Image 1: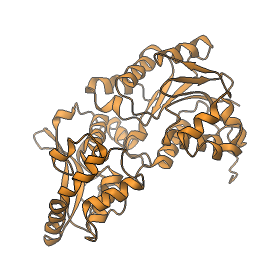
Image 2: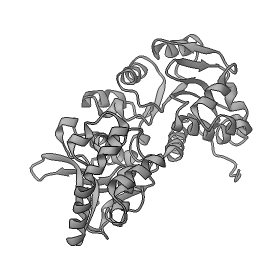
Image 3: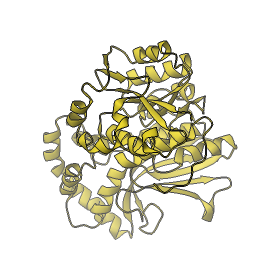
Image 4: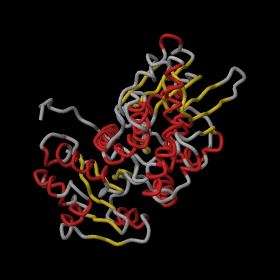
Length: 388
């Protein structure tokens, strides 16, 4: 029985704790299901990492998940004394420890952080200077840096999995890679990539509450980023569009995208969250008028990422709030669902390829990461088809 040794980067956050919970209850040897169980050997936070070559103690008690899942504080308290904790200056120290322990080439790193420069450097170190693999939900290393960084990281398909960076509950990334590998030219993409902005649009088209009221409720329910401007500025959607375009061969940078935020630029510059939440009321009338105008045209509004390959071979990229027909594939989206419509040389007209999934909350993202880990198992065996 071969284990899959896993190191979780950023495991104490919301998504990290959900991922841990799902893995511990379903994927480890202690769940009594998998012939190729997951073995969590290390877990990081901002200060250092827990490490145990034989596997962290936390995974050996599936029945105790509720004791630490509720909050980061509960998790950190539970972890005290279970396994050795190593403070570090750089993630490379963890990579060196794995080599010293004789585990080179036998580890998958799972990135559930939102790290930027430090994680980019670590991803590059893993891919270029080790035999380990990476599965990531962190978009930043492959989207906010030049295309050459994306290509360097993803050149080994079997070692770098980024399915969960775009619509973790669907096959968007893997399908786009398949189009590229089979030389199927993508001519157009239209997508709603943000569950948060999809929820706002679906509620606004009802015309019952103001934009600021809906945003405040969304923030209270945990639908938005801690600072909602990080949803409303459209940058997250633009990053997903960049990843998609790069998967099918385009050299695209953020400066190539025509980006219009959900609300005006002056509001998006407000740093303080409380001040921002008070100030967004100034956008209520403008947003109301936009939705009323769309309704008057027999349409509704969706925040859409668009890619077009023109007949002369030039490509254009745009992210903006746009009018669409209510019964169109994007217009009929409800709640926080995401959808991508792809048009290629084969899939066009009435047979455009459409992918839809729920907005990627912690549970969906965690499931997607587990799924991608399974796809990278060496010598993966069939199960016994038990239901539990």
